[in-house]
Image (tube, rainbow, N blue to C red; front, side):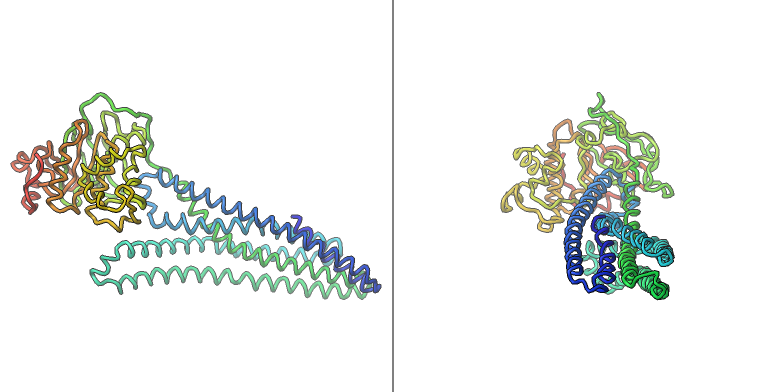
Length: 553
């Protein structure tokens, strides 16, 4: 505000120089006024630097808080909400939209506080000089405000549309880079380039379209201001000839109109920027307003029961309008029991175990974990009791140690080596430079698929859970390593229930109990020998499992 007031005083000093100093030939007066103008310029510069510093600091801090809140909120969402929003759009909103908001806040604090003071102050100063000329100022400001409002009204939804197109580019880029080996293996480079070119063209078209409309703002503001200047000169000329106005006042009025032009040009740029900012804030808000469908209870200890997991009439679908992925599942798994879950691709195996860890909630029915309804468990307590190794293992950038302690930060070296030995991973870890401190690159690029899977199993074992779920986690292992791993897993502590998900019967044939799924339904339950006699689906899977029969007993 101080900077703006100092700027508003300059035209009046110029008017004094013209009407007094130059008219009377008073050189001392002119020099004194120049000195005042230099002092005001330096004062304005100091105010500008201070204002810019705090505006930038506020903008950066806001963006930091937004990213923190977004990440915290996303981590609270269930897999269903994340699937619905989309991972690529979440990345875009976290990076691009938050960056846009940061820039918008910075410019808003600098210009939206300064520019209106200059514009309003120029009008007020015009009224102190001449009423008729001041009415021209009022008309110019009114027309410019209307132009800016209309342009902003039109462009804001268009910027939202453009950001959605940016999401599509992110999706295309992420898919291509993630599956680059598949693309090359099938010689689909040209097809993927064409696909990317299409989404990139749509983004370019959307941005150019809104850019063309936003570009109209500058010429319209210049035309309006220049018309105002012509009117001021035309009205002022007559009043100067009539002795009503001094020539210095005309210069001051033109200066004030020029001030208005400069500030409204900046304001016009701000309007374009704020259109992007408002669109980005809306997209961020959409994520923050997405409520998790999961609500947790306060239970931290298991009940006195022999059941590790109990399903009763459970059905599940990924979306309300989708077909059931699981239908009317009823089963029980005892504590310390080793259980196999088998079925063909798409039969619902991964969906079933995802309900135990509460990645998703059942659509119908009741699920109990360690004798407690799964919805009553406190979140951290549930995940301490249940550990899961996913079909596609994911290791974080860092060291072997930091990955193994992911679920148990206070794990000792002895506990980590015991888990590595159990997972048949201790041999290759000892061979790596640094052992537990061996550096794992992003995405574990410096490890083979089998090594990643064994480290993921070791990470789960470090937590010493009550229930360990292996979701087809031996897919990348050779048969000998797989058999050796299963032999080690047969030595798990008595309290630990082991659930093995697989599409191959040799992997689960020696389990205490095997559940057979087919098209989301439980079609068989029993031992390997019992199912070979009673379950046609299991027999078919077994005959198609052309792998060695050895395993642990």
